[in-house]
Image (cartoon, rainbow, N blue to C red; front, side):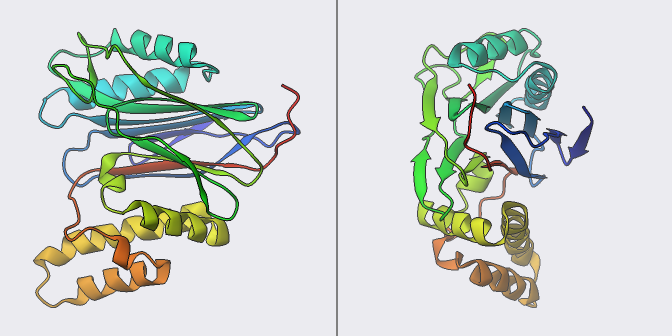
Length: 265
């Protein structure tokens, strides 16, 4: 199975199948500050896994921890249960460097269900074919030394666990906080509607471009970049759903579109 790198994402292609199958649609990583985000998308005929990691920028070896975690999930079979995900997270943890930590979300698709496990602030959203929000996770924080991450010597006692039923036409999106913090939930719903109408890849890449322009506009006295950014978000219908100040952080997101709901599982 061929793989390709896009930014700091690892994509392993999936092929269409007669049974319930995810379709990889988008993977973009935007380096804006620390370069600690990583993404893995991996699909087989009846299963898939999506992993987003967000290294803790204040620790010097966090990018190495994020690399280790993403490489591990890229090389192992897609997990099909919460127990599988936990086991693989702990296995990857053994290879972590000292003085580093990472938040992560793992979304495994098997048959007609998505199984979500998260540590820290990456989030997942499930939209139907009309763009209506069906399910979402929330940032998972635990009262510990690293309240929002896992490290070589720390694994949270409580993980955020979810199991969602999938239907034909659903869009499953995962993102780090650099993406999610720059748009409200209502704005995310609007992006999902646009994605169902015009395709997830084009929609989310246009939004990502707009955020980059807003950040660059801070140093542009002419106002040209701000106007260009505003045009993009106006076209997407999300300008009013942006925060007062765009957060300068790595922005990573990935999506699966479900295109078949006849499962033999």
